[in-house]
Image 1 (cartoon, rainbow, N blue to C red):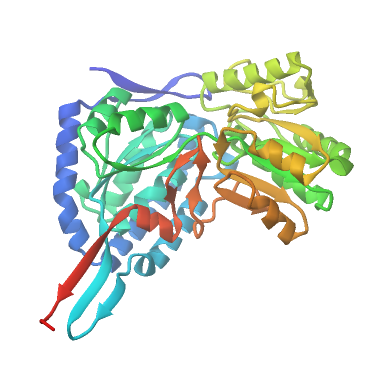
Image 2 (cartoon, helix red, strand yellow):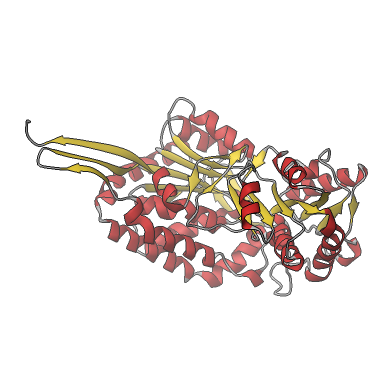
Length: 462
């Protein structure tokens, strides 16, 4: 029997291993989930909300185990704790708006007619979650899907193999029925077979463009709805009236936090020429003096290893190619002796970059950022849109009207002003172009996890 092996980036050891579930056994588990869905949907909204909240609360009680476990699985330093701040914020918001978002749209209720549109749960929702923020990305769909009356089948990335197991255990211990929320250990082939057989009513996937294409191919002809959040290459634009220190601090944190492994991390920066030299100097100092690369189990470490050696090698390749093409790296490797040529990768800031370089076009998903000067909003806009992806864009200015005007022209899912690398659960988390389609969280997230059902009831003849 084949197995899924989680290789820890901390020391290269096998941290966890689970047998791959056979397709027939997985299909039987999904069938049980489908059978359980009707009873779950019949429960009151208030009861479903209470059980989801209880599941999240039980999960938070596991924090002492979760934090070092995350460090071992994907390298995030223990000093940053778990992901429970975001998990709680998102769960609580979706619980608070559920009654409003799922309320029927009343068209008429007269002596002759009753006409309304209700939100009906899809049925079984398949959540394929990524490793970079394994709890927060999963909860984006798990919580509202369960609240809306769906059952959920969770498949987590092998790099964070234990997360799905832990989430499901916490929810079951809190009272969510076993077949309402299940975790499956599947390989790609098993997942694709289940999808192609029409096992699911909705699929949510966060991951690579290649993974999204494979899911769309597998689902072809099944008419299964889906939400896809795929690659990103998020830009920041610092205008001449920006608060320079504030912009440097937020944007560099957005580029380097979690070793740059953030869906909406900052990967390329465009700075108005009057601020360019000062911004570059401060950005290099922020990285050189503010980050410590090392073992994520050490509380002094601020940047741990990348989750996998091959991820680090891709960032090294993009950086080396850029330097060979004329870019300059501003960060001295001597400041980061823990860089071992493997998963432990030093952060880098590049200047003299162009869009002919992969580091300014392809997703890096690591601790490297390129900075270019610009001479106008038009030039910055053209560069920001010169990209196959569209998740977020971060604009820095004191002029909200200017930001809105530029934002209207950016091909992106979210426009930030004086903020970066943040997910607001009240707003729809969505992307365009090769970043994918659909949207999670907010009221729209509930609409995507349900389908409209119309009632036209004629009470008596005219």
